[in-house]
Length: 71
Image (cartoon, rainbow, N blue to C red; front, side, top):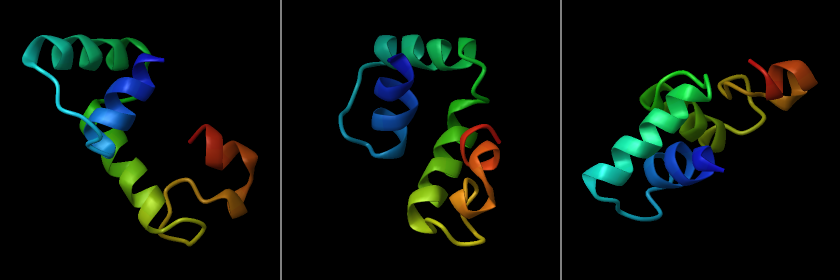
């Protein structure tokens, strides 16, 4: 849940603005979820949307389930 609020909505899609305390809490929750750091996750997610299902997509579904959901 916090990953959707933090790395996904706040940093990737910039759907809302948050004060420093909330940003700190969400970034700590993201780190505790073992999903790499927020900046790397956001970069890969933006590239995923930009290059969806091409070789440039870091989570290309054409490479298989494991690659698209785990790597």
